[in-house]
Image (cartoon, rainbow, N blue to C red; front, side, top):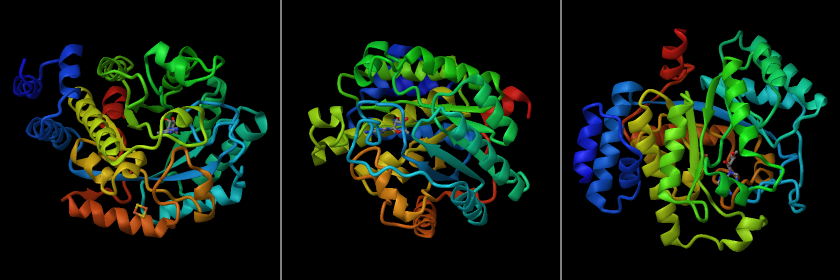
Length: 365
Ligand code: 5AD
Ligand code: FES
């Protein structure tokens, strides 16, 4: 079927098949790409509006018990200088986020499952909630935990959780992780988060070595199947001090362009299929091209996560090479991103939580 016909079917409300998603993800023609992005923007305007929501991301520690083959802060990377913010620092950055009128903050770190850490996060979440009178949305992105831990953090005041599935293809998952990292555990964590009443976000990396368009189409269908509220996905970018980065050489300009286009296509197709969810334009898009994140918004994303981490720590949280904004401070990123969003004719949802409409619909909240 022609691309025009598939997009027309989508606009008329048809459910697209896996085969049709593969066709959309395989587009290379410039006009067809534009038609895909326009269709995604049509759904974005209709379901979530032309508003970009800011979530200030606090990267509070790069200590990690995991050893994913792609990630720059993996346990075995001895070149990383490890850091852990103390409670006051994390709270201070969350309060900066609130004062900057971002509706939400995201607390992210490498994975730790010890009680000392769990209790520290619990206290931090409680303090942020109290200091902002519950106004600031608190999202956590702290990896795999027990249902009990998710419950404690939720009770303390967190309302959203991000945990990427990375890829839903079991063979590919096994290739990019050590044997003791499990796709089933990841899925079970997502189910536990759902049971615990979080707004749940997940996502994948695209452009992984060996990954096919069929894999990516199945990833999108998985997001639909588990009825996800938020999606954060981004292009895989090699990090030189990782096992995968040592095999995949740094991207050429041509490869960067291709990786960016694939990232944008995934956002667009995800918007077309899932419609009323929140979709983040990943920072990794900007590592490939300076305007990558705005392009993400033009293709269907409606959330941006400006970095609010203290500048000194930023270079130590390099998940991939050439991560942007490592020399900038939080005010610079606020001004820079706000201006760029205005430039594409959208407004920033300052002081708004920007909950996922999908979450509101399914819970009646
Ligand atoms: N390239 C792109 N994204 C990466 N992540 C980790 N390493 C990389 C990389 N090399 C992503 C993973 C993880 C998120 C926090 O960062 O998807 O879930
Ligand atoms: Fe950080 Fe532009 S977004 S400097």
